[in-house]
Image 1 (cartoon, rainbow, N blue to C red):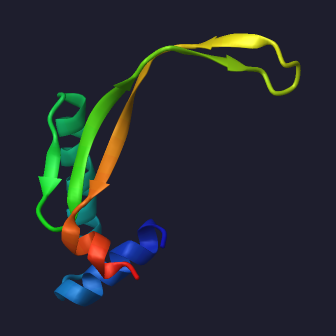
Image 2 (image 1 turned 45 degrees about the horizontal axis):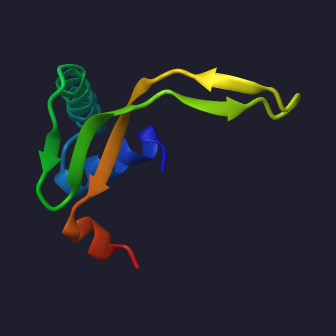
Amino acid sequence: MNKAELIEAMAGESGLTKADAKKALDAFIKSTSGALNGGDRVALVGFGSFSVVTRSARKGRNPQTGAEIKIAAKKVIKFKPGNELASSVK
């Protein structure tokens, strides 16, 4: 499902227009991004939680040459599904 399909599904389920569903989805994305940038955790009961974790620096290999390279530490977004979401997937 892509963004356009998600907007259409949200509009159908909620009775909103597609324009209003797009505004709601964009607001959710913007709010979630802002919270994660601020170091907060976003938890949606039953759906799941988003958090930021730091991956430590590590050594890797260049697949073309086999040479060892250093991979820098970085922050990544982690999603942990909630019980309702996890149990709904069969």
